[in-house]
Image 1 (cartoon, rainbow, N blue to C red):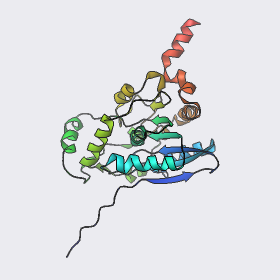
Image 2: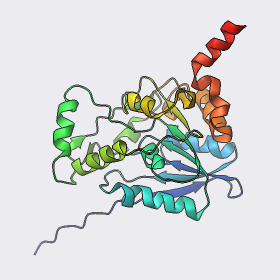
Image 3: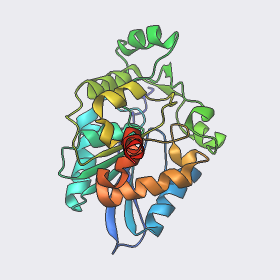
Image 4: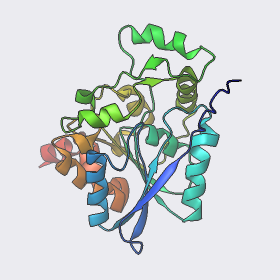
Length: 258
């Protein structure tokens, strides 16, 4: 008699980095990212060097119950440790937006909308209706879209396919985004091909929106040092610290007044 192997239940994994006495920072990683990836490790090292105790959250890559498998465990972890500052990237940004905590968020290229082009616009809605949790649809993520410094081995480390159940879960979470909070800051690349840039703009006031040069992962882009300085300022002081960068028209108005 042959037994079907049990499917591993999606789980959230958290690793801690830096001095336990430093200020706690919850860092919710993007889909397929791990703290051991070189570009992610670079960002965590910079954050710990600048005085943060980083709690890095690695998310499941093929879940189907957003609240139970993603949001609830991250929320419980943050509450247990009284963390009031959250940095998040991509899928992590979608999770962080649903945490419903009294915290300040800094979002990096949040996945608040699907970036579908060409044939994908037709195929993904069809695939998303299939009643299965098996990964069938190509992820569509390539190394150049992530950043010039992204390693091919790190891209290969993530699954190359997603399930219809996962796609339905993500689309539902994107449709039910909570209202934007004025204390939060969003960093985005105008040329991002992984997430829907228009959805980010529709969700975020211009004064809280900061563009950067690079791919979907700023920390895998060549201009990452310059962007990190702004991210650090946003973590320390919120949108006031990046006001002129968030809204270029502010600088233009001041210069014309002079």
